[in-house]
Length: 444
Image (cartoon, rainbow, N blue to C red; front, side, top):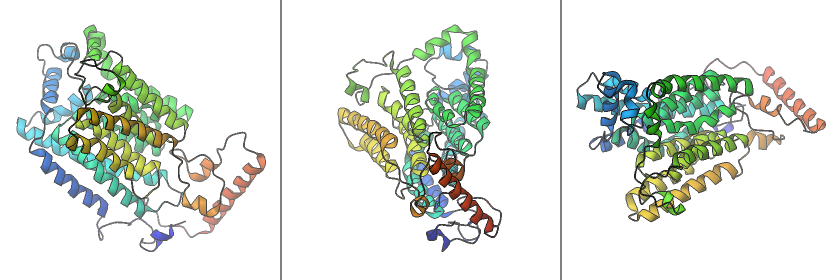
């Protein structure tokens, strides 16, 4: 049933909501593209701060430079970058250095815009049958995307961290595949994320959202592709294990200082704790039917326990808030994304005290984790209006009627029978309606 607010402005097939005239481009995508271009030109003047790491690693891995090849990580533990990232960086090596940098920056910025489209489409697909107002969803993606873009430009243009960019891009593709019920796609994309940047293991709890047989198939793809990318380095050069113990300075603005960790560099337990905390929180989110919070929780664990405070770390947080604000909640104003931008990026620019910045990071990480895990979720309007009993929320790839039929086995038989009658009645009403013209969801 079409939402009343949308019915007055949408064509009959509902496929042209928000489009610019007869063109396939939508207004919110056009506005976000202009917003991206503005930030790109602001950051590009002092961009590609870390691109030389990608060029160096790519040359060492593929150009038969002494100390490179499969000995890359054994001899250069400072290159905490996955082999897939070096492979993609090789696409820009034929160009002159400056031209290659600019092309890489433009490429990574474009991936950010594509990720906004993917998240919007995933939200539309996930909420099919819930009375979702697609125009409001587009507005929500526009507002959340406006907060996401500055941090995306920070990682893709100013620092040119292709490894972080690819890890987040593949994770977004995994979310899209998850919503569509594509178990193989989820496994492949999560594996590519880990093969681009190791800290992406924090996103693996997304596998738990899949039904058990599909989950096993997806996990096999993850294990196989991760092993194919990393094992050759470890099996041929045992010194590669030392790369996992590479340390960085424990900066004064790190949240670790508020836990009494004053070591001058990364504590030995820090990286395992980051991964364990992120995966544990993600598993808890899935258990509480809040899988859209997995990316945000993994990013929270990263900034909470990392000894460094580089601003490009915040891109993973903003992707997490974008997914949560678009898929995990139904409020028009995605205020979690803007709180993240103001707290993390605003404090880095405006707060002079290192200790205070660390406290703000700590407060945001803990506060946002508690919010997405425990704050009561709003019931979709069509369920409130019809007064229907509320079962578990629909899982990715599952329609709302199917979700209502998967109530706990201990549900009282009378309640279960009532729900069956409701679903059957809805199905009969749908069957009596004239067939709608074929077409994609109205968001697309």
